Image 1 (cartoon, helix red, strand yellow):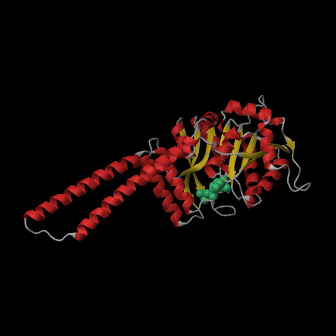
Image 2: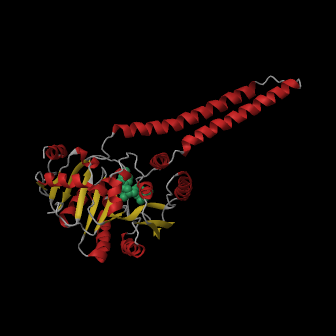
Image 3: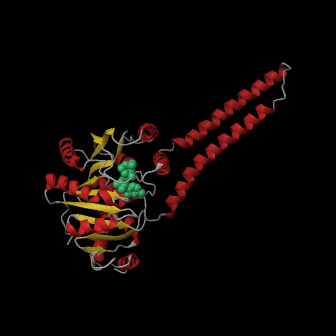
Length: 371
Ligand code: UDP
Ligand code: MG
């Protein structure tokens, strides 16, 4: 059985968050497994995290977990978003090295061999994929992504490389460092940069999605960008101060101009200039308040200290496991202990053919709590 305290670590863990990826998952597993076998034979695991999908993603993951002993299926209680799903996957990954990759096959799993090679050659802690080309993405997405990465690398304290997604190979010590960073608004690629160590880039061509649609519509992308900037930089707060100073200068200029006009007996009625000033200063104050609000909101979210994600259940080797709700907040050692306790509550998975569903999710969570 897996997940024993004395279990040796597999050489590689592949972690893939999946949100409505049912159509492409089997192909993803086939290619990822082949890529792993090329570098470490059977000594790997593939952690597939179902991020509250509404299609057949979870049944597909269950089937894969039942058929292949290297697959660990993790189902979250609801859709927590890409970054939380990836963090959940990293929490379960036990490998000496962890490959974080999207399940939509935009990033080729075959690059694993080259990444391993680069990691060994350069004695690196992280090898991240840097996108040289992006197929099948709109001009808008490409242009906005380029502008965003340039802005971010100017604002953030730790340099965050441009054109880099979450596709990367990390050593265990980096993954463990991420596990003890408790922030709720996660921007993994920035967090990895912040951890430091030796990080190198590997250029590759990003492909079009294998199937399905992007789970990142514009609104989510904007949120993600704001999370990234406010999570890694307080420059916008300073921007507010500069805006205030700038507005003061403009006000002084206007005041001087008014005095000059008055001295030269050329005072005009001036209704429009007053209104313009009022609107201008009102706008500056609103902008500043909005920026403050972003940070206060983030403080509020962090202060609640909720777990990053809640796990509905985990399936591997034909068994289903329930986990206590605080699992996400545990450190690596405590997680192993919880795993050990949880084993006692494992239920044999009823195949989808035998019955519609296995035990109800809440029973399983309760089972985990009771040890
Ligand atoms: N994803 C997720 N939860 C979400 C949205 C996306 O787990 O709420 C997964 C998705 O299945 C994929 C990866 O995150 O494996 C990247 O998402 P997507 O391909 O939609 O983003 P894009 O590549 O378009 O930026
Ligand atoms: Mg994608």
